[in-house]
Image 1 (tube, rainbow, N blue to C red):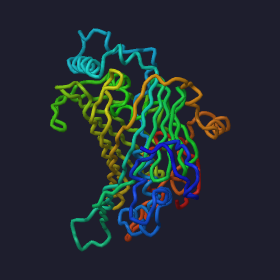
Image 2: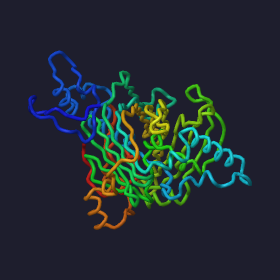
Image 3: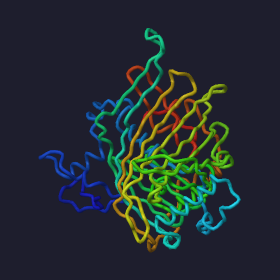
Image 4: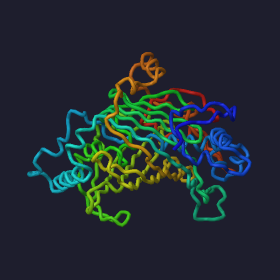
Length: 441
């Protein structure tokens, strides 16, 4: 990972320190005539002709729209359960497992084994803060829309399916900071587009280049990336109230399956009059051999009012394979993994159904604990979010649907066009949305 960037305007200019390191591959020569600084400029400002030529980017209306989709869905998703206060260190270990259902007792026993496998309670409780830096590669692997009728002569029903055969993907880097589970911050840059997200213990927020800063509804929740092998303490706290539902072989490892359903009160806190979070479920697959987390899955279903009588449903399924555990200061931290995402839209009729599949491969380059000088000021929300809260109060207004719902991407194809009002952002359950005009991005 490169931490210094060459001057993009002058080849002989001084290098600057990058806020978010970027992969070394960005600096490699694509040809004998293109220099490293030109490659960086190409990465930050995509070639329009190349974008138009790609079949997958054409579906989303251009490369920038596809990147917005990837960052919006895969960039900074949150886990359904609120953050457990750091003062409640490992209450899951102390209660007796007697007089409880066998599924609950098994889950607590598996969590004991997991805590021991990642380094033990003493090692985990000694961590006050952490930092991690790494690289990612994202790609939209498939998009399909519509439903083909039984009668092939029926021209009213069309089906469009596009696959990204080459799977080149968009490259980038990320930095995450955490001080106790409730304070965290993420900065992720992919192909020159940056997304920031964080929590100050009172509110979780997100900021993107194409949308103003906005807060999550309900109590602050942990970033999913921390549960992908970076933060064993949050993982243990998350599954402290789970149940064991069986066994499964994942990546040639026999695993126990732990399941956690979001409480109805938490779902109601994230819903409003126009958007309802129907369910949000998390599954953890823990190796019977090592005790470590091998795979993390979660699925959530949103119900949006598209009119007085019709509703649109969005189902998002994420599956993360967690690999390459290494010991850092006595704690086992995953340094690599792969996430597959399936985004499914249905509800208004077979012809409006769509499914989008995305993938992300990540690799952690650096991890460190107990960062000196990391104060609460490092986790403050953006100033425009504070102003918005002062003007409108706490996030709780209705999400505007129809033609006024400004969403970060648009899907197009040769046979049909779905406006932004029909392509609901899967993060509607995580943010307040204000009325904006329907625009192209």
